[in-house]
Length: 255
Image (cartoon, rainbow, N blue to C red; front, side, top):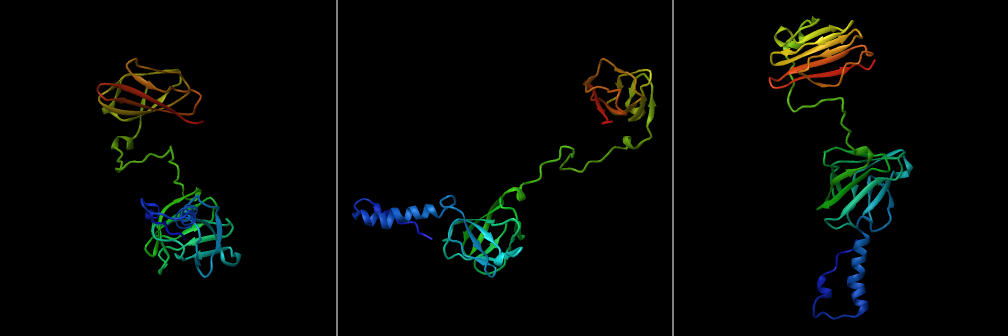
C-alpha cells in the first residue's frame, strides 16, 4: 500500500519539475485515497490455508475451493500500514466464512465480544483497524448484527418487581356503592342489568373484573382512560386513588 508523501515536497522554497511533483506527491496522494474505503471498487479474495492478503480497503471473502464454509484465521498485513481500515464481507451467502477471534500470530483478528463471527449475509460487514500486528474490530454492520427491536408487550425495569399481597387474595363480588381499598383489591362485577361504579375510598388501587354485557357508568369524580365495551368477553378496570386524583383505566379483552 502507498505511504502518504511528506508535505515538505511542496514546501516553501522547494523546487522541482512537474513530473517530480506528480510522481512523488500528487500521484501517491491519489493512490492513498484509492486505498481508503470508497476509493475503489470492491474486489474478492479467496481464503488460502486460513489466510487472505488484502490489497484494498474493502473486500469480499470467498471460501477455499468453493467449499460450503471456511474459516479465516489471519489477515496478512503486508499491504496495509498501521492505522489503516479494512472492511470484509462474504462473497456468497451460500458459502459462509467464519472469522476467528484471537487465532494467534501476526494478522490475527480481535473481536469486540471476544467470539468468532460468521459472515453468511452479503449485506453484513466487519470493520477492522490495524493496530500493530493485530486487526481490531471497530464495528459490525448489516442485518445479521442489527439489535432486536423492543417488544412493546414486554415491560422492563432495572429493579425487581414485587407483587403486593392484595392481588393474591380471593376476589370479592361488587354490586354497588363505594369501592373501599381496605376491603380488598380485586373485585368481580356482573354488569347484567347495568351497574354504576362508586367512588374509590382510601388511597391505593383496586382491580375490577367486569363481565355480563350490561351498561357501566361511574362516579363523576373519576378521570377515566378508555371505556367499557359490552361486546367483549371481559373488561379489567383499574380504579386508583392517589389522594389528589381518582382514576379509572379500562382494558377490554380481544374477544
